[in-house]
Length: 164
Image 1 (cartoon, rainbow, N blue to C red):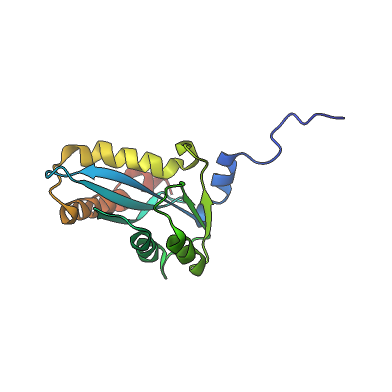
Image 2: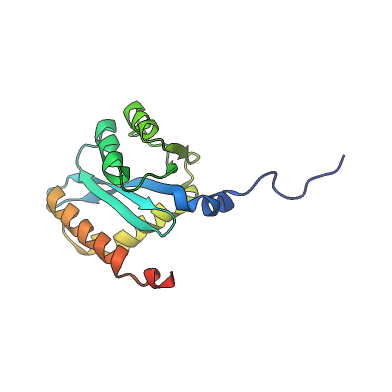
């Protein structure tokens, strides 16, 4: 019997590149406040041009809140084919149902594998290094305003857009 020396199918990186135009990634990251509370920030990123589609912060994320953010990010204007996310428990039945209503196929990364969602993980690091590490956050309204300004800067001014 002949041995197959290559991988049996395309690699994960090849799959991400092939479907980047119709894929969005989302993930949570945390931001501490001046009152020693923790804010959870949800970021939705378009994989084709690494454009930030949506930000929102909350102190108590729920599946309903996360599903509502999916509607705000991927509503009428941007309806992707795939949604790449991790296996966090916050994505409950309500979130999955909302993705099906929007006709978005969910692709979940393997447990403890941040390299399978590289674009949003890298974006989270960039936000921390360029923005969040240099400010003191008093609350949700402040971080939402700061991240909105950062998203405008990143989507419109950042040098990667000149590589079209």
